[in-house]
Image (cartoon, rainbow, N blue to C red; front, side, top):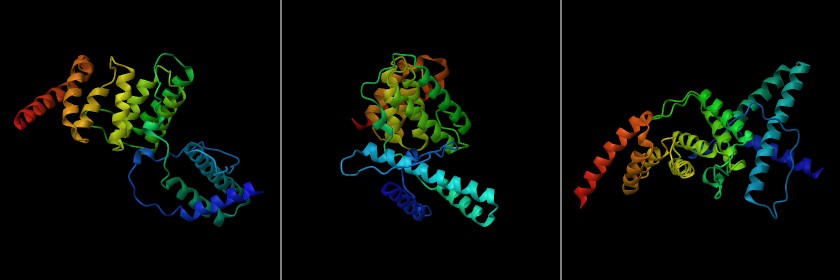
Length: 270
């Protein structure tokens, strides 16, 4: 009885705040809306001795329970033909789906310290395929300059899958690929410091560099994080590693130009 009361108290409070959506940074941490989310019950945990991860997980459970309750109410009003209340619950569902929700544990906290891509794991491969499908649906085409996006929610769903892969399967041979693709998405959302950490993880896990992770990391350091010395060193490394691939010729030419410009800038300051 106490559990049910706490859950409904949460639902009432959440309903009151649905319309309040202050603008804030952290677009890469916004939780994607999943059309298949279903949960039948929610529980309230003891707050006296718990961790951040437990609290964040409970928020996710309660969010899903709230949405499921609204969907059940929508089904009921549709069945009994109460059109006025059906419109109310549909408006509330729409408000819930569009309100800003954050992943409070994300980014570098997900990257395992002991990760190493050594094994082919079917579940990880499936997660990677699902993430790729969402990314294609989003329409993001990585290049020296990121393309205009069609669907940000699909991109967030892709990001969630890449992060799930890295967190659940740190020994998968897909973690370096997932880290690079997640870095591109974080870069799109202007989470440059987090994107840099993902790119670094990608080329540390795969030193041969099948993705232009060093190029992208150097560009972030150069253009957005204003660490020109580090950028220069990484551009030079990228030219020697990823730059050997013809498919990254545009990146190599960009890096070679920036190396000349940064070296000239350094000579002018000495």
